[in-house]
Image (cartoon, rainbow, N blue to C red; front, side, top):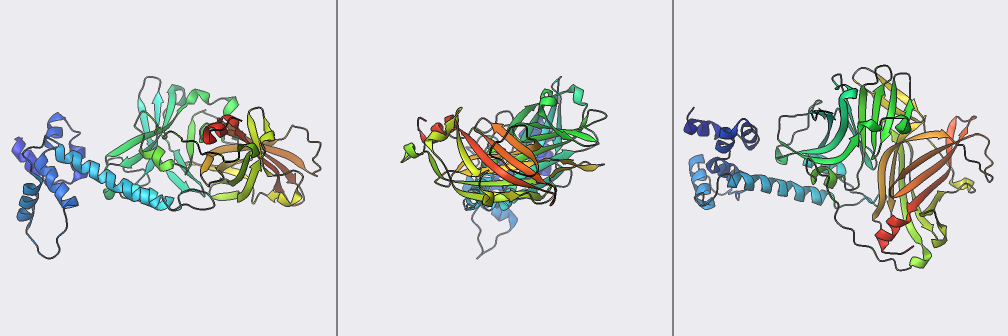
Amino acid sequence: MPSEILLKIFSYLDAVNLLCIGCVNRRFYHLASDNFIWVRIYSTAFSPKRSNWKVNSVEKTAVSVNLLSLEDKEAGYWKKEYIAKQIASVKATVAQLLQPVNPYTGLPDKIKEALRVSGLGWVIILRDKSGKEYLTERVHLSVNDTSVSVVWYGKNWPCLATLSTLDLCGVTPVFMDRYKSPTKNGDVRRPRWRSLIAKYSLSDLSESTLMGCDGLIRVFGLSPGLLVGLWKREEELAFVMANLHLHQLMERSILGSATIPYDLPPHSPFLDDAPEYGLHGYQLHVDLHSGGISYLCGTFRNLFSKKGYIENGYMKLVVINFNNNTQHVPLIGKVGLSWRTNVFEGRIESCSIMDVTLLDDSGKPFWCFSSPVCMRLSTSPCDTCDFLGQRYCIDYVDSEGRVHVDLVWIEETEEYFVVNLALYLSVVKINHWFGTEY
């Protein structure tokens, strides 16, 4: 078909369909980048609106083309300009939505609206040993107090034995103003940017990463924040759950590339006016949850740690003290990790998701994470403990610190009580944050 006729046909398409048809072949790509087509799309979207007089479509196009001067522009110029301006417009809107901060969490207060405006979503890419990729759209999404939980499941998972890695990526539509709420299986046809958040090795699904099991599945935890469920009988994928803390989630999900995660800007140390006194005025928000149910959700203020509390490269922050009964708090409800697939659903006892948001004395997020955790029988002796019940513990560790929780099961009331909660902050992290030399 002659190029003139194709250009006439393409002139009736919108920006999204022009991008899609440009992927057919090299000829269509060049034709779909025609400046005369894109300048009309650009002028319609961004030219000043006039309400006191009207012109017909031919006159409007002529005025726009004349004003925007096509002769000296290279092929595809107005296509690039349109895309760049669309992205800048939505980024500015999202940045404005992220400015109001919740005083309890130190995180953006309008994160749900920012997610809706940006059209942000998440996918996983399974890669087999030959390099073939399998992209899977998310099935379920829930926004928690300080995190987002994203779940994938289905019938047509590739064979686990052939897989090597799993990539977690944020995806945003190229033209965010055209964003529509995705269908259950996702709208994979619209052009999207991809931003790598984390890469996981599936060879790490071993006994050392096993979190728990029930009659049907076994679940494994991979850092950061990933939960992988395998069918017991076939040892094949049942579901994947990603737990993403809201701190800098938009940046990590949008500003990276398809192969390289977003690199956080270099940190400028906050000067500590009294380093000899250690840490003071810290605030912790913790949420222990699963399936939309919070077992423990609270904020603890005025936390401090003296310089002498440093041991084995960590500085200890005591949140709930063993010896102070007034600080002990119960877990609400029956603790367990809820899971579901397109066929079955279940619950794994003693597992849950832990969200931690620690703010420094200026209210800035110091340490944030969202991760699956497991409650286990405590084997450590405790000379100062005098509790009538079985002791359990929850432990979490990463490069920035450790969390240790001690619980007691009260048989009479059939509930867990948190009798000890302590954070162990990496001295390396503290020195990097404040420019100190502990």
